[in-house]
Image (tube, rainbow, N blue to C red; front, side, top):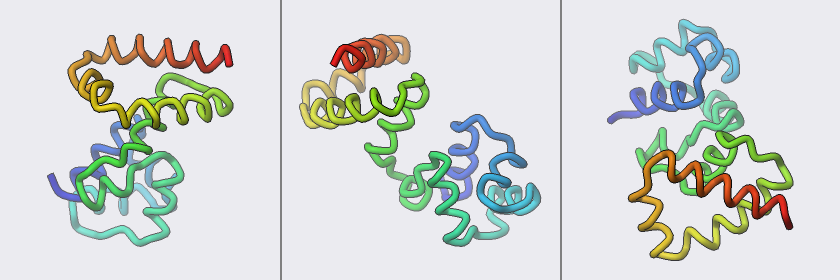
Length: 127
């Protein structure tokens, strides 16, 4: 998968159409279309704005997901608020470093990951 395919993948992951994604990144729909077709390359201002809305720019450039951004995106998808997110982030970072936990997550279904996230959120709310 190349940069332009990953760009479209990230836009879809965020649930945005080309117009809204382009607006958020400071370009018009036509420019966004050209980026996704590989006809043009975005500049650093575009990539910074994309990062601000939750795009994993490292993934766009390298094809390798950033674990920290992956965790933040997961937390946003489960609607964890700022205070809870800070607590969960600390806990997630320590858990992620445990090889057995990481192996377990990789074998879980989306529903099972959802249960884990609700449990972590519940735990964070109690602290």
